[in-house]
Image (tube, rainbow, N blue to C red; front, side, top):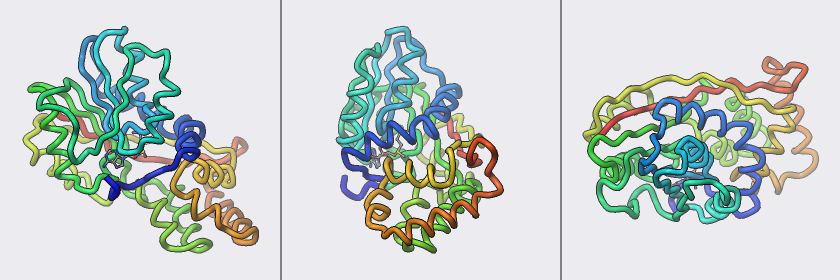
Length: 270
Ligand SMILES: C[S@@+](CC[C@H](N)C(=O)[O-])C[C@H]1O[C@@H](n2cnc3c(N)ncnc32)[C@H](O)[C@@H]1O
């Protein structure tokens, strides 16, 4: 499990839930679920659930009927998921597990979501085969994977600023959520598992932050950037903020900065 990407420690998992889920992940969870809405009574898996925004959003649509499981390799994320989902029904079962070897028998789920998880798995083909295996015949799959960083230009600017003021390794952390695969490659990989009705869609959206500095602070508090940015001296930190401020000027307005974002959505059926 330790080869998996985007690993956060305890306080960072809480920061992810507090700062990045509302700004980025919650609106995209609504959109993903809109493409494959859960039906009351279904068995639903949220793979790479993180703090569980997709599972929680799905639960609200299930009229307290059905089963929902959230799986993530990171126990700290799961602890936050447990803490914030207490009253929700159906009750969500939060389980530690790797996408490479899902801890479920064949055909266990009617619907499988995976929002911004695939890109971090050590073996994409293997993970997709596991998704196929745990889906019941007729079961539905809905995945979201950010498009390459060029289609997410505010984050491309952040990557460039990190490269200039921190180092290449830190810049790579901020680049890692963005796909390296084209739409065609992704489609081929999903089709190769034997899944059918594969449909690819491009989602266009935006994330708001109060300022370039606010983006840096929130990513620091809720992502693996915490370690490298925490060790930055005052001068380098000020230079990073000033540079990102400048780079994000085209997306700056009276409310702060708005970062255009694009994601692949992939739906399929077993
Ligand atoms: C960017 S977060 C997305 C979390 C959540 N789906 C959301 O929308 O907020 C990526 C998640 O993938 C998880 N992850 C990475 N590799 C994994 C693996 N091999 N198996 C299961 N989860 C994994 C990470 O621990 C992290 O919680």
